Length: 164
Image (cartoon, rainbow, N blue to C red):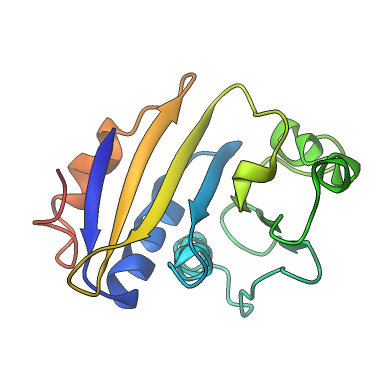
């Protein structure tokens, strides 16, 4: 597990930009955190890093937003309002398995509502820290390795001193 302190929304967005620039196709990011912790802000940064120019908005009511114009497609899912059976009916595995969609980056907000998980993913939990910033806690599963990301983040000015 690795933790990064994010001083403000701009640092959260910058982390997302670095992920968007670096993640390979078929990467799955499972996002957890309280309301307002920065999940959508992070996904907006991922979109920016992918070169997506459309406004990236929370899919709380649409459930899934697809952005296909960047380096890779971005599939943004929000499970906040859904029960387990409703999540299953969305077939989220179609996105992480590339069934009927091009392989891309899959970002799932409120991922704790998934009844089953992909074989390989980045789990990122955003929490409020005591000094008004956020803390991002990374855990990898399967073949997902973030050594390269932390090397890259050490050179990213808003995040350089915040990797633990």
